[in-house]
Length: 476
Figure 1 (cartoon, rainbow, N blue to C red):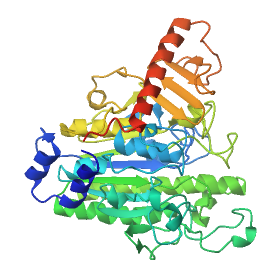
Figure 2: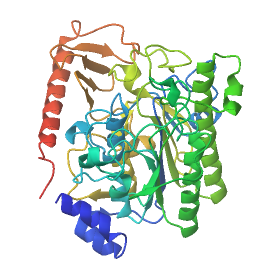
Figure 3: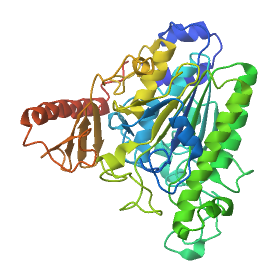
Figure 4: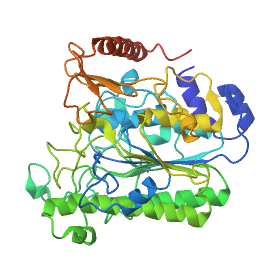
């Protein structure tokens, strides 16, 4: 079942839940009390761009509090070193090379894939997407963002066609302050400042949002998330909220209130640090709202970034990889190792730090594992693993490796070692990540048996992704 399955999900809604479960082949084994799920993600926030990871200047008190209250993942990996592929991995549990989202602004979410939103709708969830989508265009009728409009009809795949009931979404980037307006100094023609930026927020087919679009973009996004959470709590329905902030992706702009917090820094740093602190405040606002509504205990709140920081080096302008090698676009640690946390007060009573490698592909199997059901007919293989045993304190090592592909780069990560190639697998480096987080010493010549075994695993995984791309995962 491929397009037919997607169309059934899209049109059936929740009427006749048992019938839907039977026709979709889902097995529900969970008792009452389904947890709410929130996936928060920032855009280009480096591993070092938090107070709790040791940034000497940046203020992130709410993220710091989360790091001390739940599970802090010290080896959490984005699915890719750029945004679109990582976002696909969050929603499907599958590496995006399996379905053609190879890079930013490349491909779109195919109809044959089942997203987390579509899966949870079969379990009675209400679903919302807020912020940056970047998994397809949002309009066929007018020029919008990078690919939207008549020029990109074949890439049309908006969130409302991928399982989301409520949307406040952009195709791609916007300024992090006054998001509809081109900021000063952006682009080749400085005279464009003050003109429309050209990327819009959409709430549905041909529904462009025009109100409450001034000021900090993270606050603008949260102004839509809060009513969604309130409505779900009032109706006593479990909810999935995917909150994908634009911060701190270029154009990086902070308002005067948040720039003032860093008045002793250069102006570029004031904007960079200020917009992250503004986002941090909105995370705190969300947590307070959940507590006031009485839904905090039974809500899984995940947080991560979609890839490492922009720029060529750690500065206030470009963000910090926290001493890791590489940055955005690189499969070295600095490009894919990002801040990662889970707070779930009703389940995780004692805070702890986890050194086992985890990744954005783990969201899908973990949430379905918590609920205890499996989508029969789900495209396979799933690249992520369920972290339910880890949450329960019963998992110390990852049961299988994490594979990465991006342009000419390949990488494979296990609990200790990382195999890396920058030339499509023609040669490889081997790093002992716990001992050498900066990836400064190649161990391939010292440990050829480990490098060879990991190369075999990586080659098999790459071949599997090629099979998937050729449609072998989609059952009739």
